[in-house]
Length: 373
Image (spheres, helix red, strand yellow):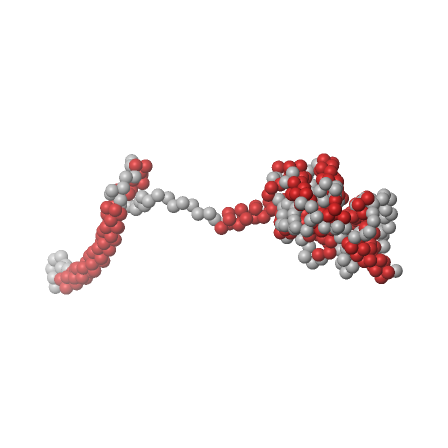
């Protein structure tokens, strides 16, 4: 009816108020979410400020001059970062660095033993006082005259003798050498020294000592009576050259290549007979049951001995041929020359009644030949 009269239509009040009511009903939820969001941010900000204030309070008394005026200092004062004013910790050694150092030390030790020839030129710089010495225990007291042990002590303290440090006198008469030979490194170090001295000069020095030793003025009578100390001292002195050359041979093949042959032999725990060969020049026979390793070192050593075995004044002349026959049994008939003739007479001191030692060597050689034949 109102439309028919041309009046403007009226908006229903119910719908208007209904929409408004919905708007009003939604407003409290939005405000609540906004309030919660603002409250969380505020609390978090206040928490950070609280922590910053604690840090700044603890660091207030500490002067950090390197940070003043820098960006870090500004951020620290605003509480946006926390600065630790303590000094930097001392860097620790890495386990890998320790391992590398150990490897370096090991490789250094290995190189010193695997190539002894490289140290021969500088070995003379090693003091002989730090090396084994002969007759370092007791000389005993079974002497016919007091001049004999006195002379032995005299030449042992002689500067020329100590410089030469004869390897031949260490084999049988040195407790310190017995300890040294248990280590390949220590044995190599010793040979570096003994193989670096002048062979010609030391041979002259030691031959003169040997002649004086068995003279009537000193130990001649005790030598004739086969005093063990005197006999071993004399044999070691006159066998110096042969054992110098033998002990300085280098392994050219096989296990331990590049090492001293003697160092390989004396530290070979699987076949101790390898070291027995080096006692032949001292007059010690090769045990009948021993079978040295048939390697290049053994071949070279036996070939070297042939240059001295023919000399009747050398103890090697009484031990070499029998040992060579025994070596050939294990290594082949042509491995070593087993028939070296003695072309020079024995030393006058060896004339007359043979010693018990000489008799035992002769009997052992005969029995061994009978077994072979």
